[in-house]
Image 1 (tube, rainbow over the protein chains, first blue to last red):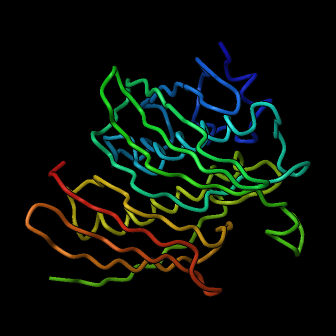
Image 2: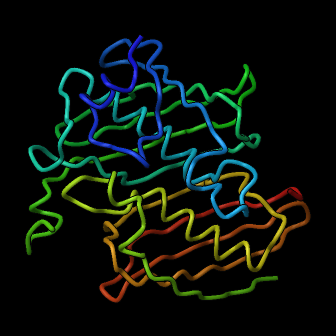
Length: 154
Length: 105
C-alpha cells in the first residue's frame, strides 16, 4: 500500500488539490489503480451549492493518478526542481454516473504510449464496482517552468 | 436551435488551490478550467449535468489573476444538449471543450 506520504514523494500536487489518497496496485510503465475518497469536508462543498462531486475535480483526480503512473520510477515532488506535467487533451470521456461524498473512487489508468516529454493514457473509474467514468484518451506533456513563465517564477 | 453566450471570470489569486498547485509555482490545474465552464453553464442550464466530454484541448496554462472569457455555444437536441466552450484570456485561447449535457439533477 502506498499512502499520502509516499504519493507526495512522487507527484508535486499538495493540499488542497492533492486529490488522490492511496495507490493499491501498480505495474510500472503499464498501469495503476488509485483510490480517492470523496469527503463533504472538501473545499468544493464549502458554499453548499454542489451535491455531486464536481466533474473537473473527478477528472483532475484521475489525471493525478495518471501522473503517479508516469512518475512512478522518475519522481517529481517539486516542479521548481523538475518539469510540470500539463494536460494537453482529452478525447471521449464519458460520465456514466455521479459521485457523492462518502464514495470511494477507484481510478484505473493504463499507459498507452510514452514518447520523450509526452504520454497518452486511458482508463476508467469505479465506485463500489459501478463504472462512473470512462476516459478514451488522455494526453499530457512535460514542460519546464521557465518555458511556461519566462518572466520568472513567483 | 443554437444559443451563444459569453461570461467573464477572474481567476482569484487568493484561491487556496494555488497553495497546492504548485508550491512556488501557482498555475491553475487545466481540468479546473472545466469548472469555470460548468459555472457558466449552471446559470443557463440549471439542473443539467455533464454526461460526456467528447473533446478537450488545452492550449496554454492559466495563471492566478488571469481574466477568463468563457464563450459557450449550446445546441439543443431531443435528449441532450451539446456544448462547445471556448475559454480565452486577452493573450488568446487557453482551452476548448466539446461537452454533452443531460439528465435532470
